[in-house]
Image 1 (tube, rainbow, N blue to C red):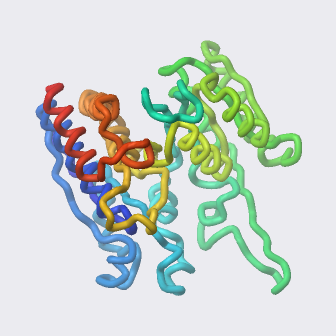
Image 2: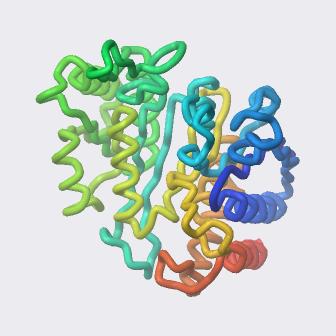
Length: 349
């Protein structure tokens, strides 16, 4: 089997962690008799210099022809003002390709300083509307200023979008520990997140095998800190999901190990949950685990489950052998860690 995969390095630590992920994915595919045809595409600050856009049309057009792609982090805050005013590359791609499901696992590594040992959950984040203004309208954004002294943001909640993300979460929970938690703020945002809760409950009724509960977003943060290991699959709207997944990544040990995939029924984009970390860019010390694990999620989505599991085993074996980056209490650099994972995969083959 051969896959055509896009590779978009991005900004900051992206040009370090994305090649590390490519190296590991190639090793895992080779171990299962498959290959990847990598298609490098311009994005981010480098693309602004060469193409006049952080996300050139040539990139978007090429992505539509591929099986999936890796997107490195972007540092859109540092772009020139005229580019900062546009949708950032990640937001545009999620909206353009209707990548409605943002799946963000958080799992602690044995032997690492996790704040919640035993944490193993997945945040299922609705990715196309909610309180994210850059995705909640067909054209432009859901933020506007009717006067210089008034700023308004719209939160959009629609039945079809809620139903499909709820079904994704239920299907995932079925394959895991069969526990679904709906996160909302229905005591205050009754019409919007109350709608979200109501529809998620209705969809979950089609899955009688599941244990289903729900919590307000503020209470959920407390429960995660206090007893995060008790939870399995969390489903929530866009902004709540973004916040909770950053929290759960850190509770698992580091945002450097927090992967994610953005998917529709037709396409998927692997993207680490963390940012571009410009303060450590170019030093070769960034943890590539999240990007590597995101690549494994992409392979699993493509049906290459054996290769995906090989990557997961390789990551965990390398960490168990004491090869860790600074955020996990070790001294390994980006390239050293990736090489250790590749060696582990080769040894497992």
